[in-house]
Length: 359
Figure 1 (tube, rainbow, N blue to C red):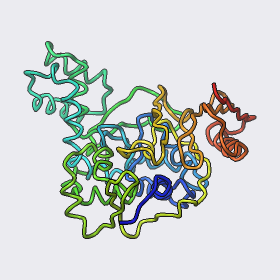
Figure 2 (cartoon, one colour):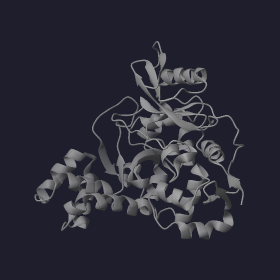
Figure 3 (cartoon, rainbow, N blue to C red):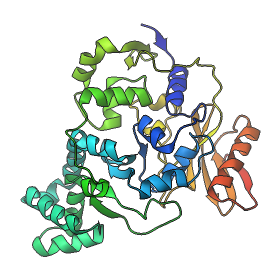
């Protein structure tokens, strides 16, 4: 089998994540092609799309979010993702075991002896009335289960039911407490039969391949996907990584020349390209931790230089500061891209880009 170096994997992943060349696509189409965007911080996805799409503007995401064409929902790895409403409805039945397993693993002692089915039903009835904040869910359920930890009850609802994070939170520049609605009520359509595991793996490879079985399991949170890959093997192409592990890919997906130039890209704090593989060396050569700073997102994140996560950035006022432990290649290009980021995040101001090297 053909050998793929970490640099070859890097360029293939960047191409599929629209990070080699900005794509001329509507935001909704891009979100679907990317198999969703990580979205713990509500404004982060705007920067993620700005780095991937040509001439992206805030309304290209804010409008479909307000129209409920796209939603923020707990899905892959039990984390919040921005997905199309149709994908959210299809993904939930397949990903539900991941979300439930994460909740039960964290709150096993607190839920011992509780009737989780009854709690879920009570939560469904509560949210069928109107969207509720976590504090409202806690207060409502505490009356019925006074001996249970109210925070655990609220997280049980978030984990046992398919929910959408409702607007206006998630609209650029707007804040407020997180509030939740039943996904099917918010999207105006029923939960579907679920995406098959075969199709889920194919979607993953299209967005983030080439990849190992373990990579797909880390991205999704699902286990025992080896049999799925074996079933799909006749439809896939296989490679070998430098570590000797078998990599799978779609035959016709892009695998650019490893020497293809990769321009600097400013990503939000938690971005799919950094989190979606078991072995992250293709984008994080030194194994550094991916930061998730507090806040609404959109003003802090990570910087790819030549396709690799080498620095972090933050915007305060109209100043962008780039922090790196080592000197960065081609700082002029990074600064130019940084000015464009500032023009997106804080338009109509005097902008300044600063480098903090070794700090």
